[in-house]
Image (spheres, rainbow, N blue to C red):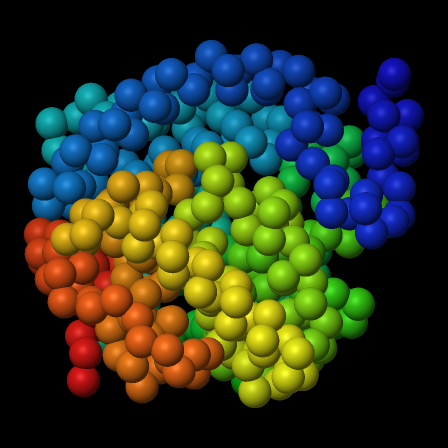
Length: 395
């Protein structure tokens, strides 16, 4: 089938089509050169990530190389530009072979904490956690000037909401998710300290959030022609960074429970099954929605949280807090944070947070001590490590 007819056949507007829609499969069919390059590159990425895992668990800062590998994965899975992917692969190879790699505290010439990545939104993603948790950066982050104007910010965010896979050869879903999550926080919280954000940006962000949410599912997500997808991660980000101040909570919770057996980002499961990262997103949405939903929904939510806790304690963790599972490509600091964050969200460490149950949970002492021991091996200035320590600290 010619590419145009293939896309037309797949872009059918129906709830089932939206749920099962796979932009990666469409890109692979239309652009086989990238599909072949991805297959050829996968063993190399796997080998580098194995090195990164070992180094990170030993306490080394490998954030810069990890960022470059993540950018390469994005090119392989979300774009059709093989020459650009080859450039990123070559950069990953050079960083992996270098005797030293920049630490996560190193700024590039534009003032971002992403000297090892090229795409603007990856530089934003590498910088946001530090901008939010640290004082004024040592250099003005001029890379933010690109969107420091109401009209430019609005055009940028709304321009990411739609992907024309055949015409552009790119799925904007990842950039939409990361950029919207980071810009919502930075703009509304006026971070980084000292950066001269212009007036009028807050209104742009709040209008974007309101317009991007589906009144049918309560979810946010990328659009592909007539198909509007429901994205777990983006929905989590918009809800959490607005502290629940979004609309359509009953619809959101109904849809969230309905997709539990579906594949991420339109469901809870990664290729290998459940992950602490996705479980944390789900648990946070449950908490934020609890006061905004019906009694019957609360009963269903309590049942789902109990199942997530059982999986975490029985599958994801050893009895002394060792990690048995984590998401594919996830860094060690991220893995520690997300499992600590999930346990904190459901009140495993603090009974005062168990809004969803009046039943006791297993003793948390050994799990918490084991997680703390691992987190304390991370570099002291690692943003995810610091966030994990906050989650593990019981009042």
